[in-house]
Length: 352
Ligand code: ASP
Image (cartoon, rainbow, N blue to C red):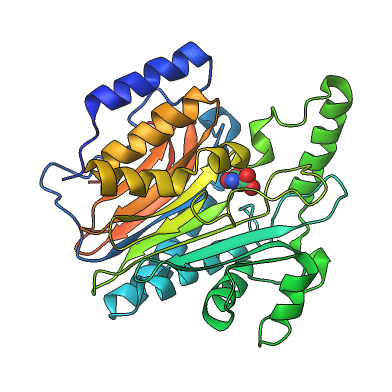
């Protein structure tokens, strides 16, 4: 059953409050009902975590988020329902979100301090711990597809920048002009970030620099797990900065022995805390449930270090988590035998 650990959750909140962070004061984890004991197959997705509040949202924008999350869920679920692989499902879901300019991934990615878009993505296959990632790509329409090619068609795990694009040129991948990634909204966010920086000299304080990373985790009918994450990184990032997303174990991890995790948040903290692997490792070594492990890492450990963000996960038994320590996280799940569910704010239920 998915049960939030009351003690851990309460401790996490206390830590958050003591740190003066902005944790959600709500049930950040899904309560998928007392009868739920794991889905035979299904997927869980996120579209970024951060200071997402009702005050800053319009009805129209909210509806667009729900619709696009649902579209991504349906794309992945259809594959799972037909007996397809968890890997195919997470790629399909992430591609939908990379193509939707609302998200900070693919089209709609945030800008670097030089006014460019440098995209990161990673995939991991829980069957054999195979993984692939790219960082700093500027012309690949769907970086998540390139990450998969790195995994399947090379002996390596991570390709960077020009090398990644040279590798991509061997395959039939859609290449776009860098302008493809431009959106007015993200450009204005860069201008605001750079103005603030002149005043504060602090480049990493504003959470809106990063909202919109996308990710998906899935369990297929064979019980295999997979994870995929894609991002433009953080607004105003500098000099070849690499975030957590393409670092296997930090932003993305999958092992059939425990769980599949995709994260979103302030990447530097996720790297230092090796968040995705840490959640799986707690399950493997301490025998914790997915929810206990996610609470301990996201609501306690990460907040202890001042890191904000969230994670989605699915485990070997089909149990799920959507845990966040921020006011909101675009998120959803579509599990066998249930309807798709999408949510934005921390205080929303799970739809059951
Ligand atoms: N984790 C991403 C990064 O630091 C940003 C995000 O999740 O919003 O690159």
